[in-house]
Structure formats: structure tokens, C-alpha cells
Length: 505
Image (cartoon, rainbow, N blue to C red):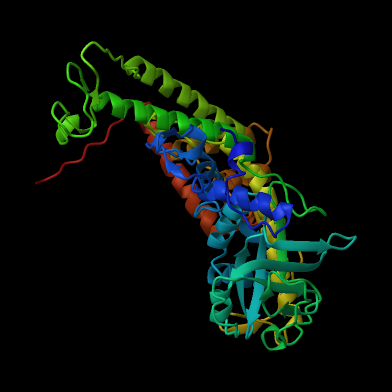
């Protein structure tokens, strides 16, 4: 069974668009529920004397390789040690946005956005309550965006089906016995207002009615408070980018079924079928019938002169299948740019550069995600927050105070994927000192290279600090004294002098 056949079994609402159906099926792969609609478990072969084909059975082993690769790339993009540093012309703006990042838990929000956006797109909704901002991740299968000629959002429409009991829970009155009936729920975000519509029956063609009480007054922001992100693609007029894992779904399905077959074969080897010959084969429980308890409860009973052969998987066949699975796994990771390194084969600590080369494919995928979700989503989100502060009267609330923010010079400074080890830093510093003394590299360039390698957020600021220390006579006097003492020790050691210390216990 391949993805084209499997996706027809995934249950999706038929009233929604073809785009929404495709994204919902990809969401099932991402969430690991793509086999849940198959009616039979893998161990069940027969149903009332009718053989159940493999395409109607749920595999007993699921690798979830698609989700694993996306999660690894998300951690490498917005993990604890990989969050970018914000640069801005205004120090107050940079400090306020850092506080908002902490208050709104943006690292967790962006990691969730990477996971949900792996199907093709994701949306970030920004809302303000009494000046305090909140950012939430919105699934896009039921969202329909619209852009103008400049590429700015004009409106975003959310419309999906809910059950009558959900309508009742929202506070709307519905007829008795309608708890299982489908209703449409619709909400719209425009540049001037946010409209909520009263739920209406999915079987009617009536125009929806705006719920003025829940919609509230016009916000008057002048922009749609949503950041639309296309996965692994630049902004454009199409709502969705490519799916991160769609190309590998067929191979993942093949691997899941192969592993399930191996498990099934090994179970047969450990619990072989009992064959009894020389009896009448009375299956109704009369004389000569097999025992109804213990290992013979499922025995095959044959007449006296009959024979039976067992076709089963042996050890060499199981090993062949496992080798086939390893090749499939490597193929999936190669297609998805996942990490093909095995942690159990690493016998010692690796340098940062060695780790980067070992995970080169995953680093390439994270590079693309930094463009889509970092330079595209996170920077756009910061700029929108600055716009919020200018539109809301008195500014937005940050650390208990109202502030307005200027987005001039906003940029992200990304840390290295894998930090350098102490040995690498020592080698780099020695090489830079040699290059500067040899006259082939300036002090400023050496400072920038060293600062970037050690994870310094702003090499230019670091160079200013270095210049200030070079002009400070007190610091220079201390450094010269230390250098003279070190030189004296090396000179004494070179001529064979020794120093003895007497220690009394």
C-alpha cells in the first residue's frame, strides 16, 4: 500500500475544500494517526472465513520517522541554545522585545509553529487584551488567506464544522436532539475588525449572521493581526509551501509494514502451530477431538493419512528484512534531510565542527527553516508587535509599563548550531594571534571571527569594548606585568633553573 491508497482511507470532512482535505491528511501523518481508520489490527488475518488483505490492517509497528525529522529540525532551529539574539537600533526596543519573548513564551510558540507548519503553512495570531499581548499558533487547513498586490494580508477567513453540543457549549441555543448535527463556525480577521458569525446548520444555504456581541468593536489596527508563514518557501500569493515530509511517506509506509511482518513472523516462530494426525478430526468436540485448552486449543486436526507443511519465516529471512528496513530508514532520512548518524557509534566527545559535519543534512534543513520561520515569521512577528505599540493608545504593556517601540534596524543574530569545544577555541585564538602578528589579519577582523565562533551576539560591540580596554592605562599595566612575569618564567625554564617548594604536613 502506498500513500495514494492510504490517504483515501483517512477520514476528512467532505464539505471542505480540496486544499483543506489534503492538509488534514498530511496532518494525520504528522500526528501519527494515518493508520487509525483501517478497520483491523495487523494480527487479525481472517474475518468469518474471509482473508483480510494487508491494506486493510493497521501495522503493529510505526516508525514515525516523518515526525522525528521535523522535531529534530525544530529543536535545531529554536531550541534552548539555538534561539537567535535580537539586534535593533534602539536599545529600549531590543530590551522590550526580549521581555515580550519571555512573557509570550515565543520559543515554545515558534517550535510549535515549525511542527504544525511542516504540512505546508501555519499562522501566528497576535491579540491584545488591556495592552498585554498574546501569540497563538493557528492550524491552516480551515484558514483561507487573501493578499493584495503588494503581498500584504487583506483578510483571513476561518470556517470549519462543529457539532451541536459544541454550539451549545459556546452559549448558543439550538433545538433539542441536535447535539450530533453539524454546524458551520466562521470567523474573519480584516484590517479594521474581527468578525464572529453565529453558527448555522451545515445543510442550509442561508447567509451567516454576524454575532455583534462576540465580534466586539473595530480594532482599527490598519493591518490583519496574523503572520502567515509558508513552510520552506518565501512569502507569496499561494497559501502553502511544500510539505517537509510528503516525499518520504510512501517509503515510511513500506517500512512500517515490513517491520510489522517481521514481528508477525517471529511470533509464529516462538508459538508454532500444533498439527495432530491420526484422529478423525472431529471439530465439534466429540470423541477424537483435540483438547480445548492449552497450546492445542488452536491445533490443526488432519485425517490419518493427511500431511501438513508449515511455511514460516526463519532467522536468515528476518535478518534480511531488517537489513531492508535499515536501507529504507536511510532512504527516508536522506529524502527528508534528517540526521543519519547513530549515537551508539560515537565513542568519544566530538568537536562542534565534527558534530556539524555529522549532522550536515539536518543542518541544511534547519538553515531553510531559519529563513522561513526566523527571518520570515519571527522578524515579521516582532515588527507587528512594534506596530501594535504604535496603534494602541498609550502603547503595549511590557513588564507592567506601557511602551511604544521602534522597529528600525531589526535583525536576528543566529548562534552556531553546535558550540565550539575548549580545544577548538584555544586553537582558533592561537591561529588568530599568529595571523595578526604576521600582518595578514587586522585586530578588528580577528576580534569579529573569535566573537562569532564563541557565540558573541554582537561582534561589533565586542570590538568597541576591546578598543576601550586597549586605551585604559590601568588594564594595560596589569597585562604588561602578567606578560613580563610569564616571559621571566619561560626564560628561567629555558636555562634550566628550577624552583623548589618545601611543604610541612
